Length: 189
Image (cartoon, rainbow, N blue to C red; front, side, top):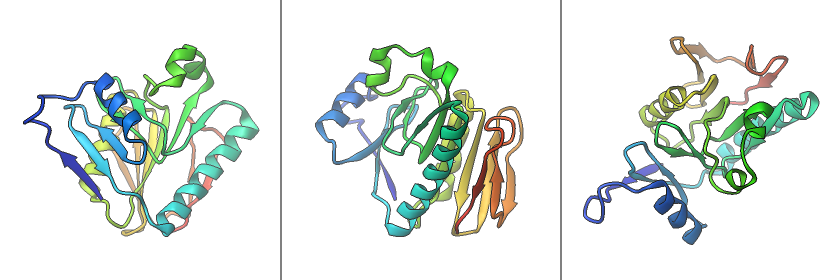
């Protein structure tokens, strides 16, 4: 479950630097920041969601290890998106070209880029609309492709740059298509 914390009594927006310092001073909290600068508090996931997320990360990491085409990130990694938000997708992949363009200082803090590919996995307590909005935020920030996996409805929403969202009912295997060529991921509902 996510909660948006209204910071209006304190400040009008939370800057990226303030957000970074807040996260550093509260490492036990899972936080995000939307493009309006609002603080989003994220609840930890349960065992089933954690198991599914780990499986997805493993499959993307194994493909990436074999292709050596980019860098894979876990849900603990924060991306400062060009659109203004600071987000942590459940799984993220960045091409080597984009990764190599970052300075060593950029790599140490929240990454100042949008991933090329993300997976968001809806947990039991997540509301669907905020996750869909988050996927649109990724697209607006330069995401090439992403999956919103919804075990509750047994659907996957596929987001692609410049295209309408495609909704697949109960797929058991997904393809990385042109963004992650040769990738196939088994979906466990």
